[in-house]
Length: 435
Image (cartoon, helix red, strand yellow):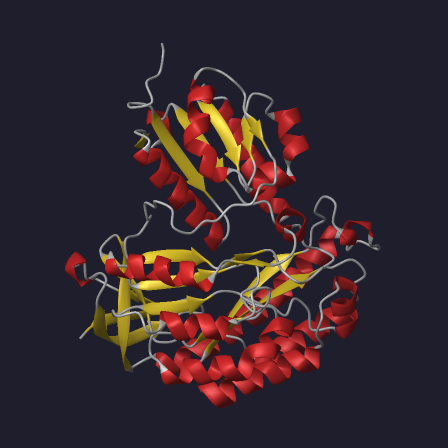
């Protein structure tokens, strides 16, 4: 049967970071504009695009397993994004029929589908310059939009495969970003997520800073909130005073900062090739809470089981979390990634030890996050409601704390700021009701 692109159905499965979500939204927009029908159910699809993350080994394994399953369905399969880049050889071996589209070529997708439908296996992995701004997009959620502001970074972390994919920092011009945000807000978007591998050094290659960008975005008319994406402690330190100043002056920026520390041991940080010390991270957290307020949400990341990590290093990570008490702590077990320097570092941590350390850290994380959420119970706040989950609505407070409003299926409240009372809290979520 010959496929007509006007009626061919395409399903896009997306995993990974915020930027990946944005790239999938752009692909949806481009495909729809080219006459394809986007479907949610893979069983209805002629072509399945798996735009997947591969930054961690367990994620890669899960995605390869999913890709194998999808390839056996008889559908045409395109493996795209970071998974195609990082696991190129593994995919060629295990799923030889799948087409491969690297992360630099995603926005050519509408031109590749006809070839795939004709039975050709497409492999497009060249690293060509591109911009994700100013493209047609179809949002997953009409109230939330991810806006990529840069790609690449200034770091050379020993464990990170992102650097291999994205290279050095390339910031997108602030004029283009401001135009993108303006267009999204005019369409009714209420939450703008500024994202990059590291938002801290945004604009340094163009002669300005993240703060310069934020100053222009907050002048855009409309009732919306900005979430600033992850920034490395060393780049955050260079802009933190100016950043906190602007965050204090506006309600348009969530009082939320994601600053991954990765380890509480200076010895391990040096082995990781991270460009700051534990003491500098502590000072950074104290500065944020002193200047922006103790209710600022601080998120961080910890990697457990880095090669050569001792019990003393492990205890140091626990001690750092106890000292700084971040609201959100993302925990990862170390795993070798292809072609990164740490894959050649020894000794590797035995899986039994890795599991125990991970378990001990998880217990500390749950307790600290629970403690940080408790002061909100029995108090009232304004929340921006953004998502529906069954009968419940999901939203965010001024500091990006996650709130589930129970028993209110009122979809007309979505995209609105409403007064809520917090009745309960777990380590991850606040629960409340609309007043």
